[in-house]
Structure formats: C-alpha cells, structure tokens
Image (cartoon, rainbow, N blue to C red):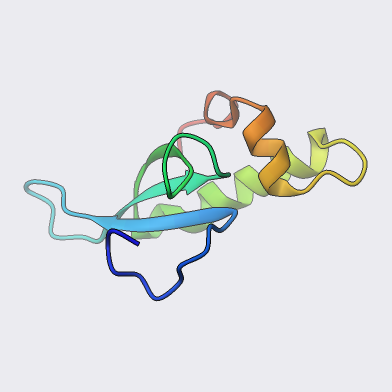
Amino acid sequence: CEKSCAQQTPSDIALVGIEMKGSAIENYDVYVGTRDSSFGRRVRSVSASEITALIKQLLQIYQQQRMLNESFKMFVDRHSIDQRITRI
C-alpha cells in the first residue's frame, strides 16, 4: 500500500487518514469497492466523528438496493453510491 498500511489486500470500505488545513481533528477519505484506485472509489472526506454515520448510511443503501447474493463490493462497483449518500 502506498501509505504503508498493514493490510495489503483490497477491502470493501477503506479509510485513509488525511490532513486538512486549519483542522486539528482527525479526517479521513472514505473509499468503497475496487474501482478507480488501489483503495477503491473515493466517496468523500469526513471527520472522525462522521465515520460511523457514513458507514451506516452506506450499508443501509446496500441492504435496501442490492441484488440477491450481491456482495457489498459488487454493489458499490455497479452503482454510483456516492450520489446516493446524503450529506452527513
């Protein structure tokens, strides 16, 4: 991994720590699936306090709209999931 992460295999949801100018709180880029980069497709940047709500929303969308036997990774690679997420 380019960030020297311990996990070398792709995951369904990846959190990559980022620095935001003027912010003292922890922030992360959230990626899903396997498209677009080694981390997947970037959904958005969020603060540490927003991560739980964002992941919950991602999983609710998946549970409501997935096809039978479709994994989360397959679902997000097939859809523009970032457009379905409301602002946290």
